[in-house]
Image (cartoon, rainbow, N blue to C red; front, top):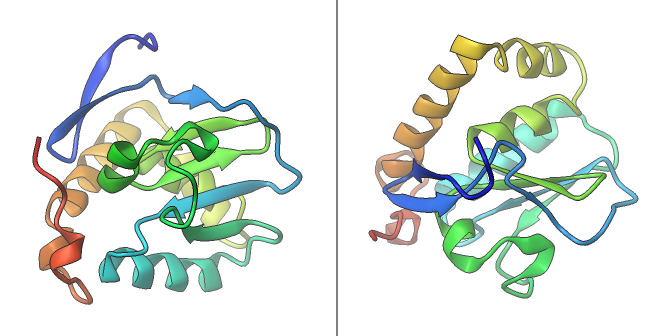
Length: 151
């Protein structure tokens, strides 16, 4: 998929290729996960997975305190899905962000992160992520702030 192509994500269209884009910086940590800190479901999930993954030096935090364009992620993109910024500045969204994050963990997580990137499995993983993202306002721990903005 070229960077000029579009994909449907959580009810909105955003420009993307699998490495969504490269931001203009490199990191001194393995990666940064940006999630919606206003969404109770996202906050609870990110916090729980952060403890379970055991990834060293990975930064997991809400995108809200940052400048809108920090790491190249716009507010509109950040409201739709989580984003992973890798060490080289590659930015991934949605299920691809989750899988990249899992690959930095310990135990079974890196194995799952690699297995789920197989061609058919990654399509199913992306589909599953979109379903969860679209309905996150109905899941445990969610609030009205969890609703995905409609286009």
